[in-house]
Image (cartoon, rainbow, N blue to C red; front, side):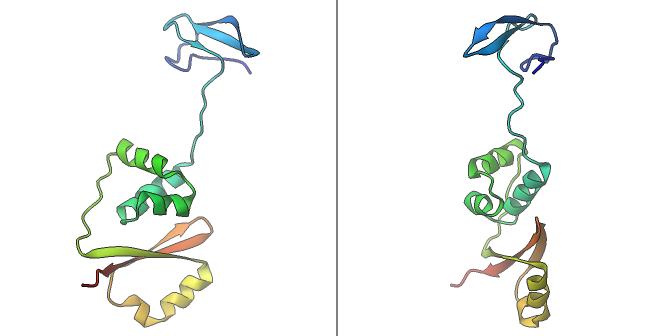
Length: 139
């Protein structure tokens, strides 16, 4: 692996600076930062970031989003903070959601009783579809 730039400042003036844990160590001449490899980190597809924020705005909790998308609830929380997303107040409504295949969505929408009484949104979720419906809290 060839090191092209400092992971901290991005400068390309780097030199070898010994070996640590059988890995080549480098020193950035500009910011004096020591490192062993390029820090790439885990990159999550923007689709999941957008979908997580969308679900958060629809009223789902961090843990519900975690179960649906398979992304840590802490990560979702960090995205909400990073993008400064504010959840609107839903008052006396709460979301319920179900995950369907395409055929199941079509069957669900054929029944007119399923379309009455509350707002509803259908969003793509990989190869499935999520139907989110807002219903009033029962007193």
